[in-house]
Length: 112
Length: 115
Image (cartoon, rainbow over all chains, first blue to last red; front, top):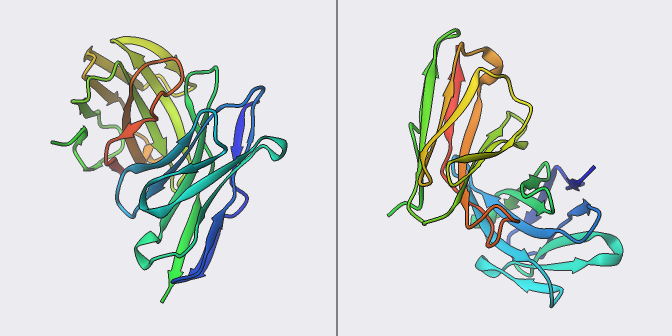
């Protein structure tokens, strides 16, 4: 079955520190891959996406993600976290089923 | 202009009532979706419509009925509300049905509380 796994339920980092959020997928072929962010009480905002080509993709708000086919991973990174980055982050994938499947989310807390 | 707008933002109602949530998108997208986010933040697709035609209908109680009068609107009607229906419901749209294209654009959600 197609699935997306985010192993970390909650991550805490200090402001200014680097961040990496993990995402693994299980699909028959390489799916389309996405990262979304959800601030409290808000909808989901697309941070970045990967379809094909360059395995390092740049997104909004200084985020980037790296696709690694050998590890079935699409990890999200940011070199220096800001307090405003505190939110819930969702990895998602879409394959031939024509629907977006989400991971369970990672809650990011940023310490001052 | 809000790209995907949902109304109402909050909905508190008693068990057994019937309620509707409305969604409209002004992006010219062909496909619209309803997702349910439970208390653990897990997002699960419920329905998908492409140009007013139902293309995804996940296993949800038949008390939930989507209606798409045109491709810019997708409403969700819920009959005989139960406590377990309490959740945040998100509407979304995308360019087309074959893969999400540029990804989905989400509305800000409707928080439904059944008491």
